Image 1 (tube, rainbow, N blue to C red):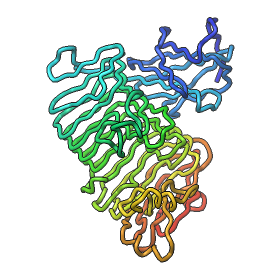
Image 2 (cartoon, rainbow, N blue to C red):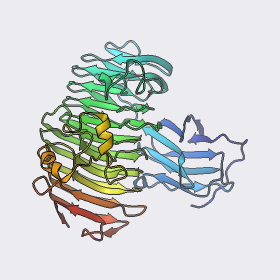
Image 3 (cartoon, rainbow, N blue to C red):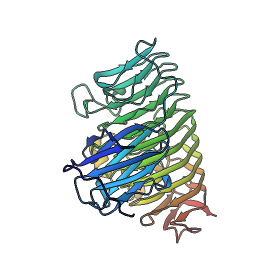
Image 4 (cartoon, rainbow, N blue to C red):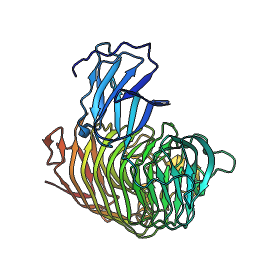
Amino acid sequence: MAGWAATPAAPPSEFEAWLNGRPLELHDFPQGAFGLFEAAGAADLEIRTGFDVRWVDVRPRSAGVAPAIGNDHHAVRFRAAGAVPLTVEFNGDLSRVVHLFPYEPEKDAPGPGTPNVRYFGPGLHEPGLIELRDGETLYLAPGSWVKGNVRSIGSRGAAIRGRGVLDGSDIGIPGAAGVVGPGSNGLRNMVYLEGTEGATIEGITIFNCRGAWTVYMTGTTGTRVDGIRILNPSVNYGDDGIDIVSSSRVLVENIFVRTNDDCVVVKNLGDVDTHDITVRHAVLWNMPTGGNGLEIGFETRNRPIHGVRFEDVDIIHVERGSAISIHNGDAATVEDVDFKDIRVEDAHRKLIDFAVVYAQYGADRPATGEENSRRLDRGGAWDGLLSYTPDEKPLRAKFRGHIRDIRVTNLHVVGGALPYSVLAGFDREHSVENVLIEGLQYQGRPIRGATEGRFSIENASVEFR
């Protein structure tokens, strides 16, 4: 990273930024700042800091961005192209970063007064809960900052779009009056879709969901999520990024998620056949409180989950859980799942984690929270795992399912240490079957076996190629 001569400036604040020589507005959050801008061709970016800079990482690495540090060690400069979300890290310190969210130019943006459009122009708005019905669109114009959340139940063709920010800072948190339960029927979620058909979420940035699933779709069909950014600085556990629950024919693409639980997860709480789900072109950061990068489970219930595709994903940090995971905590069969072309830059614990388990989220969990807490395997390989006695195992086995026909293709660990991996069935009858791992690499070196790949395998069958 060659030095360059920065223009002298007044003592800077924590972060200041310029885009093609013009000031770029940054928004502070506890772990740094973020900025949004339209990606119209190549962009020259400069960030000035209020602290000494000796090393810079710009993630994802696949974006090919080469930063240069100024001679005064208070400025960083680089060129970027396209709408890939970028994270700039200074001196290896993850507590003080800058996220840059370029976005594609909009097509056919609605204007104020357009029929069936809830329009929010530039500036601050505080609407609270926004309900969308058949054919309605919520539009957040560039420069808008909307404090509220969105709910749509049983609608057809509802849409959320724009380039503005949806801010959850004032949304109720667990324990608040009138705000109870895991989902609270959308009162705590930033976007809640229930029983919708053909819903669309496109382009917006979602900021600071606190202790609830951020984008929660349940019982939906034909949902499309494109180009959204989710940034949850809260330390509250349980703020998953995108939850695809008992939903089918779902496409999620061109996203960024940084959150303190699962980044993208497929579940089946509604206990229906759940299928045809694709997640692609994503950049993910799992923070240290819990969760995983790409996850299926733990709540899988009885009906099958199948036809799930995760493709072309950059996982820039996994600070707690696993980069890719399937946790079958119920009696369902999870099958026909692809993890393809996934790059892992920094995973602290687990790389691959496919397991059939007895956990606190399953249908056969203890009836009381006290008993759940007593049985928790604290500090174990799986968060939420419940213990049982040998005499109890036959009963627990009756409620267990299967994981089978899983393909992991071109999973590359491109930085950091090599994490360990786990493939574990509950017993021989409830196993992890027919897993194919092809093209696994650690920093360019092929890995073709369990020992060199640091795999723990029990009641599971796997082939390496």
